Length: 276
Image (cartoon, rainbow, N blue to C red; front, side):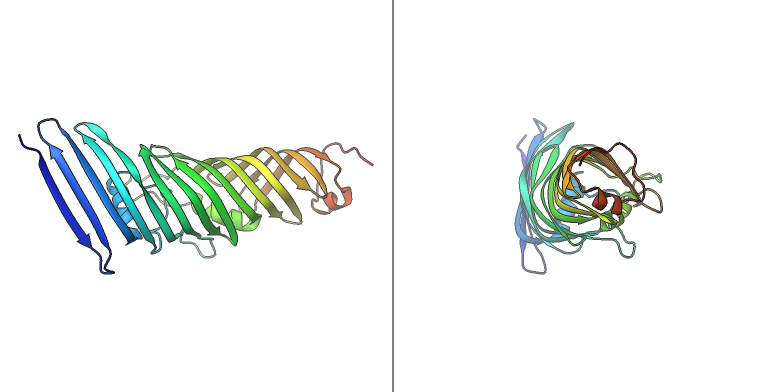
């Protein structure tokens, strides 16, 4: 049998174009699909992601605000086998609302590139604004209904209170449309994090280099190094926003710190201190 093929062209109200082509060989059960366009409304990309089962927004995320996207996608199709996607997308001025509650910090993606790598998505060259901070880096989204995002992120400055508000939003959404009426799994991410300054109540950590694990409203930092009260801190920390009042716990070894500055930042200190 001769291969069946179809080609279409779509124009948005803004005058932008999305070109789509597809072919299918009924005899071999294989085919190809491609889509390309520039400066498309963001909804064009989210519709494609959902159609191919690669909606990478966390459960409960609201529809993103209007932005622009350029895309060049290709897929190899075979009967009875998941499509193998390749290509890229470029996002610009994309607003990502983590939740609908008042006062929760939104994420604005100034720019990001998305590469389709078979069954994974890789977002790189990220420049985003979040809670008054500028965040850069990359994120990899593995396959599966509840993926663990693998991230390598950097921020010049973060505020613990704003972080807590954003985590409350990211963790507390509803299930995706059409999903079973059950509690949504927590948003999960892990990787490396570098922060120039982290503001805690009455205390600041500077020059943070750490591995991180985020599960819902709990953030765990491991193998952390930073500057504290004029000295050095190595160890781990946990920031728990699962209850009404946030809980900060820091474990580690400090060296050459100013004890008066350290004591001023905490009402309760436990452990052993040695110094001069």
